[in-house]
Length: 322
Figure 1: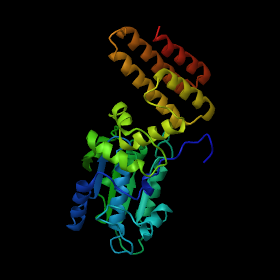
Figure 2 (figure 1 turned 60 degrees about the vertical axis):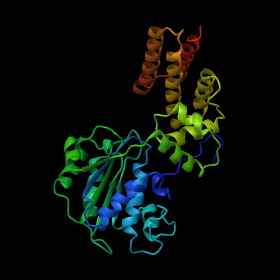
Figure 3 (figure 1 turned 180 degrees about the vertical axis):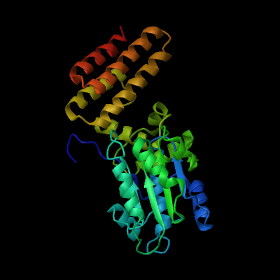
Figure 4 (figure 1 turned 30 degrees about the vertical axis):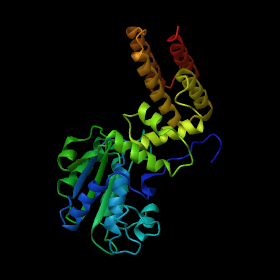
């Protein structure tokens, strides 16, 4: 890893352990065993809560059931030596098709739905059952949504769709043709999952501080924040303004989009603490926060000079203490 790179979060496809969803997972195991699993399933919940990881584990359980090194139901763990797991990782499994957005800012286009149709018309090598995973359904544009809808109106009995949506708006008719399952975690469950996942990374963060400051977020996002805090040696108990200023300067050098997203979040934390201060002029505080939001929005929309925007943001934040 280069010096200016963040340690990468393990992708859902490579997450061998599933944490925190034992009873939920067994619900689907029983549905599968009794041949009652729906053909179209929509997993709905915030980004980073584990929907994609859950999907890959469920798919591995179903695909590997008659294979060597099959899915470990006792530990909810994928065997790294499993045949189906390795084929999926190489994107060459003949019974599995994955459809996802290449980047956060890119739509899933109609040509990709056509590729899905071509896959559905192929003959599978060992069984006629096929599994389709559609990640980030909100990235389907209108044309691709309508094309997918035509498939979902009368899905083949031997095809099972797992659609992931990050609590975003999608075509209502796609939702109406799906069996919707909502993902939700309590604060205690988030802490347990976060603590277990953190053991896979070579970093040491204060669990209580992370979950106290960002209690509203998901374990996956908490891991991203922890990696950023570790990489830039930021202590959450230190002065927030100086930490934001340092992160801004780091972003100007590194141009890491995850770092930029965390700066937005850190600024929200900065203002949340200001709002709790009895000496704060709330009207001025709300106005300044709005100014910063508009500056960042305009920077994205109109490709404004980042140095000028960050200079203005720093000045606004600094003036909050005068």
